[in-house]
Every structure is written in structure tokens, then in C-alpha cells.
Length: 213
Image 1 (tube, one colour):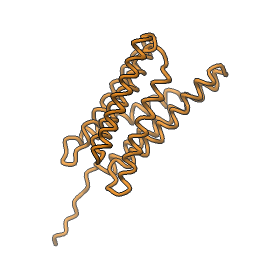
Image 2: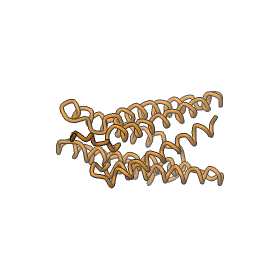
Image 3: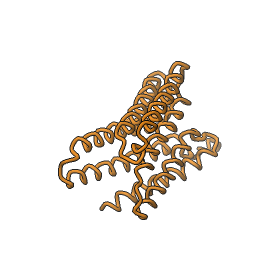
């Protein structure tokens, strides 16, 4: 069951990467930062899988994942937000968080090899804020990356809550920790399916209807 959850997520992610790569080179191409994000998470997942089989500590890769996710998705939302103030806000938040994390790692380098809940919460919630700004714009504008934005807000909020609860209940039974892990693995698959549905709605080639007799 565990392997099914893990490899189902990998499979959907690979499909997303292939489809969005195809769309990137089409007339209505996918956003370059979003493409970069998909490539980034695919590479990180691959590296983490190798490290797992080699029995290596992969926590540094997890920390790198959350920082990279914030940067790529932050730049993605910055590129589709409408006003200069919104764009400046996103850049300011990304820069500030990176600075804070650099200071944290400079003071305590060992944090990079630990499960950094502060980093996870900070980077995830910043993306949620960027996504909500985009939601606000879509109230009076076209719904661009609408379904993806729903998916990323839902996933990041729920997964962050799971991480926080898991940290607070770290002394509880292993069964509860295992349940939390499985729920998060299921949420990841749902998140990837939102990405897939966004491609279907926004980028899937449409057949032209011949109106000539």
C-alpha cells in the first residue's frame, strides 16, 4: 500500500512533467517558472528516492525542496500577478525569507540536516499568500491557473497542519505518525492531480471544428 501511494505520486508527476513540457513548446505555452518548478520537484523526488535506497539522510534534500518550491512558485505567481505592488510584495517576501533562513543556517548549520519545521511553515504559508493574491485578481480577471491555485492552497494548508500536528504529537505512537505520513502521501497525489486537471483545462489541444460545408 505504501509503495502504491509513493509510486502513484511519482507516476502522476511524470505525466505532468511530460504534458507541460509539450505545452511549453506550443502556442499557448506553459509558464516558464511553473515548468521549472515541475522539473525541480521531479529531480528532488528522484534524488530523495536514491538516497532512501542508499540509506542516506535525505533531510537536507527535503529542506532544499521547500526552499526551491517557494522560489519557483513565488516567481511563478509574481509573473502572473497584475500590479507592480503585488509583484514587489512577492519579491520582497521571497528575499526576506531567504535572508532569514540564511541567518538561521549560519547560526545553526545543523538545522540543514534536520526536519526544519520553521522553514516548512514559513515557505509554505508564503506560497499560500501569493496564491490568495492571485485568487483576488481572478475575481475581476480571467481565471488563469485557477484549478492549480485551488490545489496548491488546499495542499499546502493541509500538509502544513499535518507537519505541525506531527511535531506536537511526536511522542505519540508510531501508528499515529504512520497515519499522518499516509495522509500526506495521499494529499500529494491529489495535488498532482490538480496540476494534471489544470493542464487538461488550460493547455490540452482542442480539435478545431470545420464549419465549412
